[in-house]
Image (cartoon, rainbow, N blue to C red; front, side):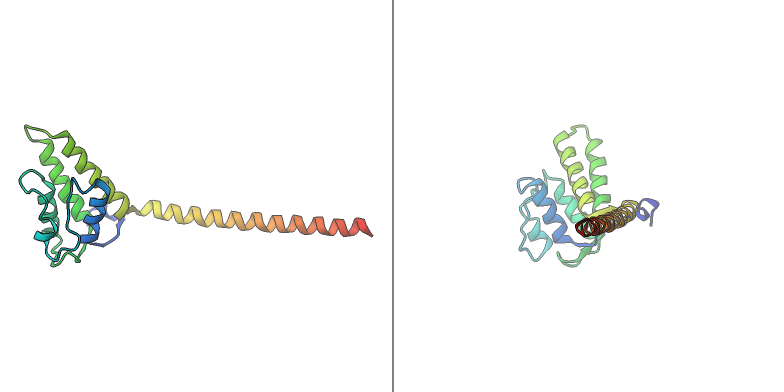
Length: 159
């Protein structure tokens, strides 16, 4: 496992779910998928393999993850690797397509935000949440103590 992957945790997700999430994010016009498909070729049948490199990205990520069905689990890092290679290829073409490059980058950003989390951030969030909870409990105890003192003072003043 590379040092980059050790710093991050992924949510292992079904191939179909990951790509339908991407389709929902970027829109059906860019990535038309057939959600009810049983086979990969049906799932990506509406993507023009000649003009849309995402066709190849889906096929390659399916192959590298050794998926046997659309419901097979896939590690999002595999998809990120394939996207990175596609992005590299697109940037080094003579006829650079800025719109496509932007689309691939947006897909990568979506996948990283939805399916990959920074382990350090998770630990920090947990400790921050715990600190906030402790602080909240201390404030509540202090508030309860102050309220009790006021009630006692009122009783004392009445007698």
